[in-house]
Length: 116
Length: 115
Image (cartoon, rainbow over all chains, first blue to last red; front, side, top):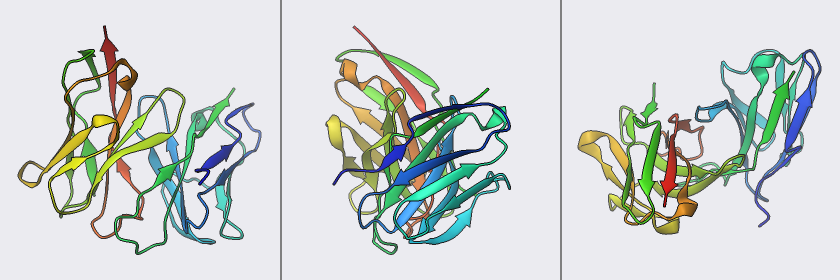
């Protein structure tokens, strides 16, 4: 069990550029979640997948954000035309099969984005 | 809508002293409850969780938490704090019977430990 991994760990970009983050969940975890954490706040839910299906998107996820999990394994989160307000830590988590009583989410180390 | 309140933004304790971090939730039924810890620049590590049964839950690193339904609280405790416990602590909830759904987090409590 190698845990949840995220790449890159840090990203600095200029306003208006597009960025893409990758998350590799724990093997055989069916559910994958994306959260965003700004300074001094707790993580806020963005979206989540069960296998390759995107089940829910938060209102925080504007049209500039898109997430995919094409083969039900790794996931990508893309932000188009970045804005300074997008600067945050983007956290990925995974959990076991849906319906498992007491499913627990395991978090990756996060990708810290700074938009200049 | 569910919400989580962590009333203390920052707490400072002396090494070896006891610790209690407060967490209150707002939800129509008993949710699943979690405490996570986050070291600077890192992701979140699960300390403990409550789903049902015994209201006193033991976790890793010597932490425990007690669920009190009447107070809608799930406070985190440790009898003797170590310097390595300095970190940010987050309480989170998920709807009952849906531990796999998105978590709702509190804003966190930052713990400082002094010698």
